[in-house]
Length: 514
Image 1: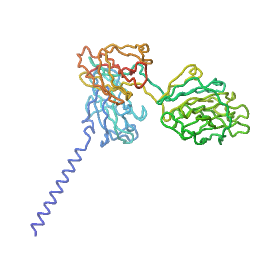
Image 2 (image 1 turned 90 degrees about the vertical axis):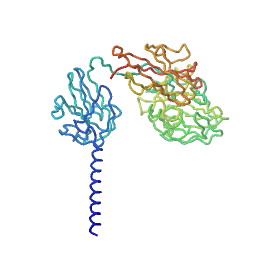
Image 3 (image 1 turned 120 degrees about the vertical axis):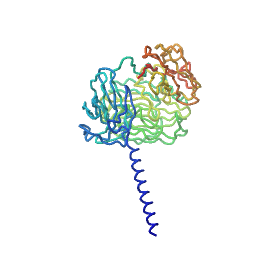
Image 4 (image 1 turned 90 degrees about the horizontal axis):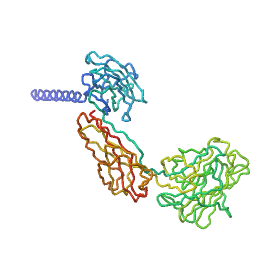
């Protein structure tokens, strides 16, 4: 019995010792490698990281900024030449409130000389600039405000040594073709109104609209007066034929007292015209946005009538807010057979609303959801011809993953490719250009390099494509060579240019060794 107890005790003691040893080992393995100065990780010119401070402890000496500072990790940089050095955590990769300390470490980690401490110089990022001499050893301590932790990139911008060239990539030039899903004009004063007696019809093409200066006002014959008060909305009676718009159909229309008609509720009843609200409105709508009050004494009303397959919504002498005379008369016509919409203006109140004195009207069309801002359009000028608006089309875009360091491979990323595009290419050259491609059937597009090398890609219905670029390992004398890149895509089905091709911005790749 005694022997069994002794064996059991020895077994338990051994297991406890083993568990303790494993715990110690686990704790050691969990420590951050650069938790103190002696384990500092080297950083170089440019962007380094991102690095995590999770699990780090707080170093000594105590932080003189950033609250209590702490939860810090260490890095080291050696200056290759005299000049100015800036170290920061300002990049968008930062996930927390960072803090930075810099030390001169020429005498080693046991004799650090503080240079500076910073918190929140660029938002929640930190930045320190100092002067260095050739061979200076600079220790960088990355921590967080009051011990906050997370991930961040460290960007180093210091003097360059002999033969050193920074590898960079910079966008240049104009891409095509961007087409917003909206058109608008904002008029700041009532006196600026210049659309009386005009009309525009938005013809539904299936994936967009073509605006033409056609249409006319049709006087109501036997309308239904919609019950509208100040800043309110009402739904029309059910349409005899559903109205087809780009993206769907609707059995009724939502009418706002302030001059906009939508295919469904969701656009609100705000009285102050706002471009931001217009561009982010949830539902497709047609707008003659003005602060009006059909409930004012003596005001005209908003009327609904169907004649054949056309639904008419008429603002018939509706007073501007705060006015007791004048009135606004215009009409929106919805063709339930073709999906065309006509806005016809008779006369708008020359006094305008007593509110929004410097913001009276916003007129236009918007496809539901957030759309690109193509900027204001002078509709009185645009109505002298025709204009196209469809589903938001973003211009072809070329970007890069990685810097063009000599001897490495980076990705050139083409985005916003029409899904119908059968093929595309990245064109590269040592020579840049800026040739207008309008005469070649690509209005709004530019040829941005000589296209000496063409790298084909097949999107296969995807909206993005990555093309590998093997950066040549140049001799020191050729470091700093510029390579100009641009994407082009052939997508005739998208109908963006007569030729069927579109082109991206350019990227100026400077080949470097750091």
